[in-house]
Length: 219
Image 1 (spheres, one colour):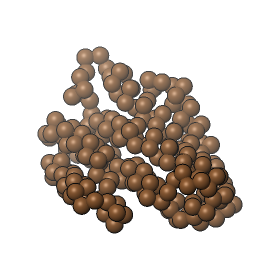
Image 2: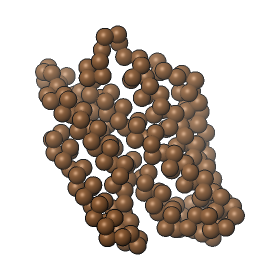
Image 3: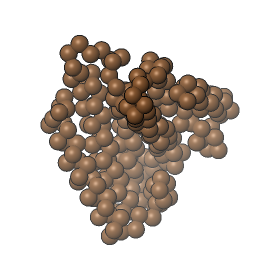
Image 4: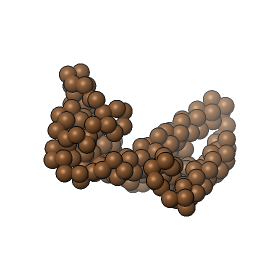
């Protein structure tokens, strides 16, 4: 039971169509652009890259819809009298993961749309440097927030099987919030060799090191 059941249904169909399109593309065509879609997009007219990009757009929109549903459902459909600091830690993990999805997936969608336009027109609308920056702005946070789901699961399993209340509840919540926040601004570490300035390299390095602080609190 979600806050927006029709949005949930729309996300399901987008996921189904996008997943089917991606599967058909990979089984019938060779997607010769590498795992990050780097290579080949400058040549233009690559139907396999266009199809897999459109599939990823549908999958990304599906995740955005689900993220909206999760955030609103947790905020609005809690039992009467239950505050946010009384919900299970697993729901907090889903909450922060959904927020990161909502903020970063639109970047991925716009990048893929630009990639499709570049493939179709070869106008130089998406150069390799811009593509790297935009793609890592989504990929890096998406990779790091996977730890939040693991934290949420462990935070529920240990109290359940030990029959004890969760330890340091608020510290865990604030640590997950810090991890989610810092992941949004630390993607530039993957651009150190791409002509990024020294001050920018220093800032992104510090932000990546700062992520370890809330992780240490959780440990």
